[in-house]
Image 1: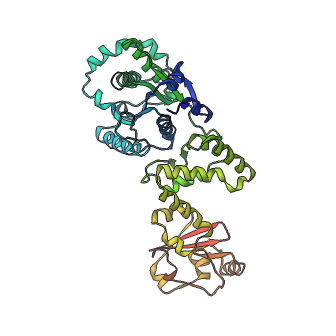
Image 2 (image 1 turned 180 degrees about the vertical axis):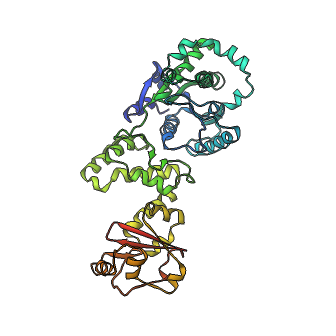
Image 3 (image 1 turned 135 degrees about the vertical axis):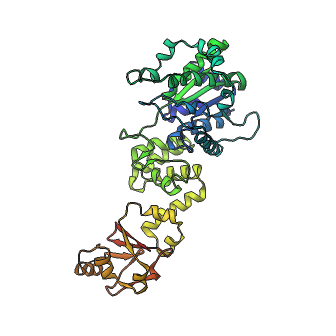
Length: 426
């Protein structure tokens, strides 16, 4: 067995809290450990990658991982790290979310059906027939209100208020650990640092009700170097579902990370060995402009979350803007093509106009207002500052017509090196 799971978390800068005896247990025997994922949406986002990687590292170290879907706890909502109560989901939406997350988690862990293989469980299966009266009698009596109120997830909400529904979440998660300990010999619970209170409540329930010892550890919450929240952009979350976040946008997120973040993320979000990571960082620092770390991050993560083919498509699409020609743009699917030009000024033209052809001077001045006048348009062309579909316009006599259409719908105009305009032809 490959021991050193905790040591790996430590050198990768991930380990936050760990209960006494946890590392010794992991180095001594094969351990079953779990992490819970509440189905708040029908897809996980990159904020969940830390815990996905933790389960994968646990399995690679020779231990047995359980990914627990919170079909029951998801009906309540975890108050940890939240300033306000979540909106409660109806059962139809909740089931859709559960199905989506289960499908995603199966991509990352080895569910080979053996005694050592990963398991995917749903706490709704053991909570659905557990009556409220029996739960309160059997479980509630083992954790005092004083004990539960001492947890940060509760203390931080006392001023703004917390419903009994949310207050009970801690007890339900504690019971999950007790259930898995009893039925699956699961001795370890893991999670982000905001889960420490819930995890220790589980070990305490196991101690008080079962008279046994269980263990826990947490990983650091990943933050960006500028203090902003990891995984968030102006457009919202970066999702693992390609229908929500395309492979190209996913790829671009990692390509555009800062140098400081890339040095951190290459340790956290890859399985590259320590020596290779140190070599990559050294090479990156020699010439940051090559963005060696960002390119490696984008390759590793796009391939892992999506596929090698999706990575290659995203890589090709990103290169098209710099060195592609008409045929390269025509190879892109429409979603990727439009994402290349997201935020670019758009110009509306009609097919009828193009059938009769438009002079490039009129296109730049009258149709698009890229140039303030025909005279300025001619100067731009004479100075070599205009390209149509990545081909430099050599003469002011060029006529733009339907032969210039990409996928029968688009024309790309470039002014200088960096200013793009997209013509939409209806």
